Length: 209
Ligand SMILES: [Zn+2]
Image (cartoon, rainbow, N blue to C red; front, top):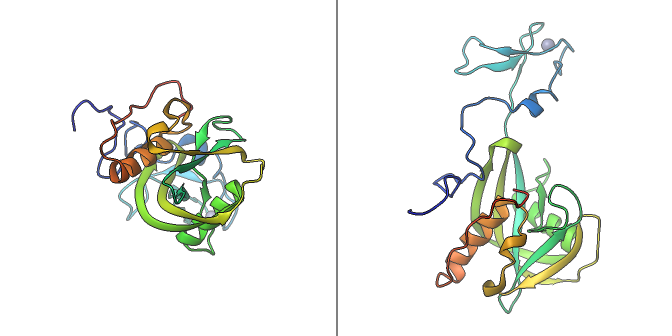
């Protein structure tokens, strides 16, 4: 690829250009202070048998592994080919456009989460289709999956997470109002499939990110 930003899509797309291999994000480590087994304060450091430093309990040896969580999102598409986006009602990115989505629960499948989150935030019933992309956000310790999804029913009702929804033709995506790079990437990857003739849009600094 030429002329693309450093934070652009790679084989394992990432939404930022922060380096890999920096360990547990500080904000996340701050939430993991004590051993879940015995209550002793965790320490970050070398552990026998581990190939990287870990949060480990000096009392009982418990290792607190920290792994990213999965955020399941959809790009709902109407029968006439318009993309549904919501204007976010909560921070981060309040007032900016994003796709519906949220954290995968431990007792549901990825497709179930896609349907549930879309319904909660947009009131729309969707059938998830192909995976548009999978994006790493190292700074947030999440992986975002984006499904293309067919809108099969439902109606929008305002809710705390969405001020309104909009249905945008591929030629009229509100690029300068997109909240997150993961949204930008998912839309771009979707457009590459459905409308490869449209010119690529660039991420503009100043959007929430
Ligand atoms: Zn312990």
